[in-house]
Length: 505
Ligand SMILES: Cc1cc2nc3c(=O)[nH]c(=O)nc-3n(C[C@H](O)[C@H](O)[C@H](O)COP(=O)(O)O)c2cc1C
Image 1 (cartoon, protein in one colour):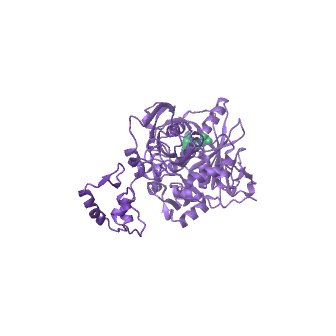
Image 2 (cartoon, rainbow, N blue to C red):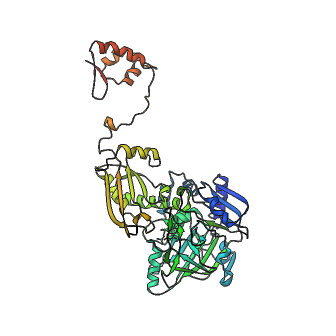
């Protein structure tokens, strides 16, 4: 009987409370107060009594790189590496009976199923309606039979209808487009309340595969799945909630939005398909989940953190074949987790930095600006990146721009264009010149003890730097070396080599 507790959302919440990562709010909280409590909060928040029904609701849970890393048993720097390692080992799911599926403990069908009975709050002042936002969607690709998993929000339109945004390029959009072409409904199920590993897998960009196996890869264990009650779809049996239904055959016909989006601004009202509810199932002690997005504090949002990791993953996989020695990739979540990307690499031959830029442009990531540095620059460190841009870059020589790329329509700087521009910033030092003195980075002097020569004896042994003279003469001060050099200057016996060392004439 597969384990249905280890990867439960509630279990992860409990671990994060113990790690000091989640604030617990015990008092009753109206749904209208939830968004403000989450905005810009570096912690997740677990509301124990949300809304008049006093339901459990947690938000911002994936909104930090540290929490995503802890979910995979690693740290912030190790997160990408661990994700890639896991993605390479897909694991087929394990089917469990409905009777053994915790998410089938409570079953609500037909008129009992009601989206407005869930603790769904209004996230931003101009949103079209409350959105169910921490939603992993499951559908089946009729061409391959594979389960497709992604994350898509649902805008409440009533008790049994919701809008879904299928504007951006995605597999679900392609599957629905195909199904819609044949004028048919597409069954879709949404899991709400999931372990971070499941969300990371849902966003991963890999060649076509059954994505339930990718979820198994990220967990490191087969996902226990149960058949939906109203479709043939398989969904995680250990989720907190499952929302079952279908996209109707009408296509992109109904207004959806506006919504405060991952780019930081509102996405406008759009024409989108409609989701029709057929059942809600949940655990007896289910915790609902909400995901933050957009605004001025994007780095603390679930959406930007998940997107950043997905961008890094897609680019890393592209770099592995484009250059020999990529070292690190980091996408700051503050830019939406997509648009600005940092890459460090060991250039083995001239031009590899440009290959890295081209590979990033051509990958499935929607990156617009790629900053490439040598491995001595820490891509996680803003100060070092600013320094590299300031000192290793000439804008008329080291910038690569290109246009007409696939773009996400939500980017307001496109001003309505369908395709967008990209720029690469080559912040690497000139190839092969890293050892030249003007590229050497100053460090405090380090001395080993014990020298007992005079300055003259040291210079008789060959050219010496000032530090060498201090070390050779056992100086722990330095000024007496200056005094010792004085007579050599006066006697015209001292010369300075191009690298600054002192030598006797
Ligand atoms: C919290 C969250 C919400 C998202 N909501 C949407 C959405 O409503 N519509 C959309 O097209 N993409 C959305 N995305 C991005 C997609 O989930 C992502 O592109 C995914 O890889 C699509 O999967 P697919 O290509 O397998 O269909 C969201 C991402 C996150 C992290």
